[in-house]
Image (cartoon, rainbow, N blue to C red; front, side):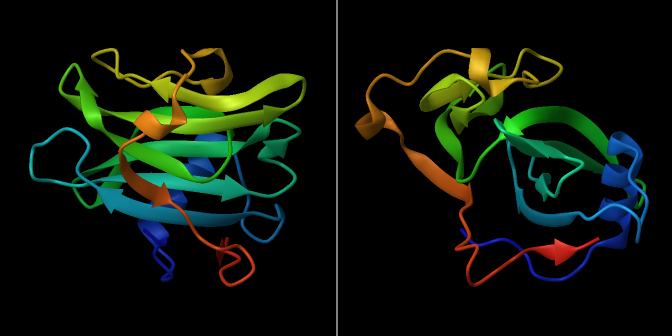
Length: 155
């Protein structure tokens, strides 16, 4: 699933507040997609951010946000995000599990599963349970862009 290509000002407001970013000062690009993670018929939005102020050797920043009265509310924040990000067919506490690849920064490369705890997803995918059999990964590749063709949306 390729990311949206149109800028989203309300989404930009949400992630700039969460990460204390300043338009025009911080070199940030973003990717996003909407998908219903909790089965309520209203899609949540997964945001993947890139740039020197939101990335390190282990990955970049990310968020799951929900729409609320014309704006977005942050449900979960992530560090060390690498693409692709998968939305699993499996659920925990009514929300679909997320699967992220981890590597770099001394982390043993592999896929990790992030389960919703009833309020949020875990911040750091590198310390979550490993997906032992990669052939068992079933779901949607949510942020799955070819970065040579789509460099994201400039903030």
